[in-house]
Image (cartoon, rainbow, N blue to C red):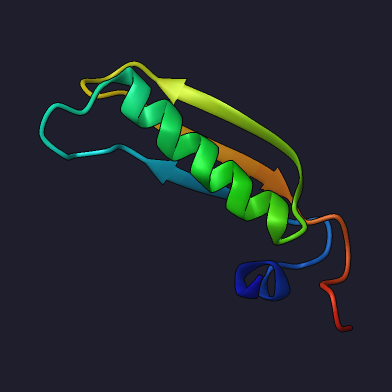
Length: 73
């Protein structure tokens, strides 16, 4: 929520995750991306999408838009 408040209306956020735990896999990265999407959705971001870079382990970039003024303004 704080990130949405700080981001200008109609701004875009990009969060990147590359799980570095032992045994991290494509599934580990996908789970991390889902968690980030859930957090961004609950904070009010819209138009979410995930881009994946096929490294070892893969990297997920979750992009989302700030639809307008943050709650409480």
